Length: 445
Image (cartoon, rainbow, N blue to C red; front, top):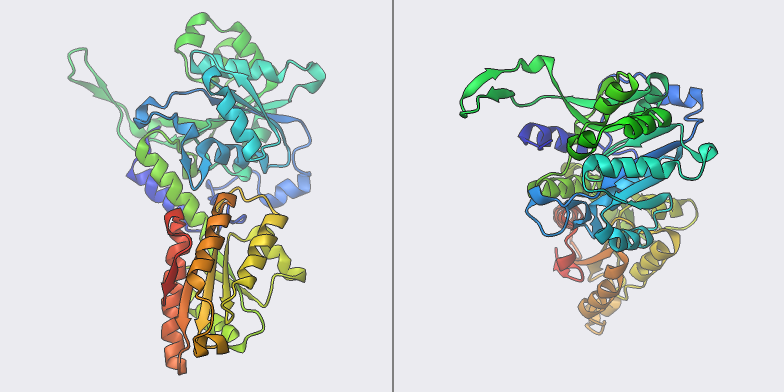
């Protein structure tokens, strides 16, 4: 379904709420859920096998791009990788069957290896959507009945913002009802036209809903639906829920989903998806002060100034011991330093590389308090600009974006606060934009 302005506003609003898992996707509530987080915990989660079929064989004609939209890259990562990760991070999902056109098999294999997707298998797609989904469903059963999933989720490769809470609801309802589908309210009025192109009649919008993804089925129902359906269905059909009803007599339960289920369809949708991910990655930062009292003072002023920009700061003296947890969960680091050698930044880069796989871009900003170092005052220090450019060039291929800011020593408290606000403005912009073209720049605050 095309993303219009109303959906964009809802999605952007969701993106501005702090995500429970920063650096992945925004968390949005889809209204009152039958299964809350506490209920999931008390029920022990999902205790039966669940697999996913992701049809990804489309050509992306409506985007007007040469590259199929599922393989379009933003923030250094293809769209389909974001969608796969949304499922891989759900512990109770066992397998993800990606159905891809034969000519894109090698590209998909490269994506799986490069972004270390561990639950993914690929299967060749068909000439139509139904044929591709059918291939994915059949492939899930090729290893024998004892290996088949009990529930299958069918989702689009170009809907990257699905959340675990909603997947849980889909899976549990599919187990109970046999089939379930996500729906959303219609935004535009639907009209019928005559063969001559004139208005025939309008539909009462309140009675209709848009069919979305994900959809869930018990394996036996979706398997039988595809085995029994006609060639015409396979060639021209698009709705899996209809096959379950027509060929298995299973009337699907319909559940209203969150606005984040929208589908990347047009070129502008790619820009919206990039914006949402940037917003999610940019909600917080970790400030490292070291032992310098001046750095600690600036960190306090930054903590106050960043509140103006809607970002949360954690201030730590180092990234050792209990503080090393920030290396695993944070996507933005601000190193405050009175030392122009950049050794502290090198330590952060090494620690990041050693501690995690950087699927999303990580921003590291070096803030140098110039004038606090005796070498800086005497004029004998090494100019940091070439050093930071060299470090940034080496870090960029590893998905780390390194920037620098120089701040001259303020003389009084009022000037500290003005300087902190200026640093906060610059760092906030660098973190939110995540522009790889600016890496290695040494800005003046």
